[in-house]
Amino acid sequence: MKANHNDRIYKIIFAGVYPHYIAKAEKKGRTKDEVDEVICWLTGYTKKSLQKQVDAKVDFETFFAQAPQLNPNASKITGVICGYRVEEIEDKLVQKARYMDKLIDELAKGRAMEKILRR
Image 1: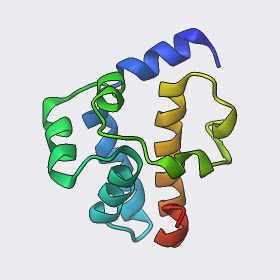
Image 2: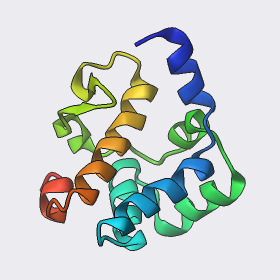
Image 3: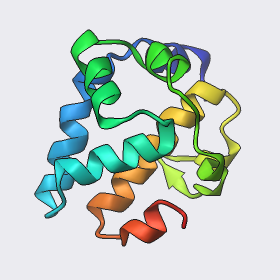
Image 4: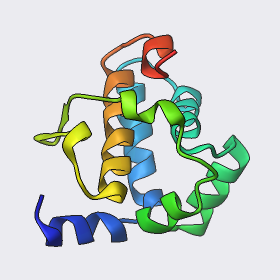
């Protein structure tokens, strides 16, 4: 991945992407609550603290820096998203952002929540 691409991801405002996650899921019959569950599972945020991050319009760098704890099973998220294998992304913040993209993608594709949450 190119450095300037990574830098752009750091500065993307989470609140700008969040509605797209919800729309993608809802278009496929999933819900905002399911999107929130997936994001909270990955980051350790509660629904209330997630909403605070959205309201504060933090960027991805801040969003993940302030996340209570990345789920220990996040490393089980594998596959290709945006042309990159998520398990091979070296930049940890970019990898976390792509983990989230991958989870939302799985949700939109109708995968069972048990499998998405790596239970």
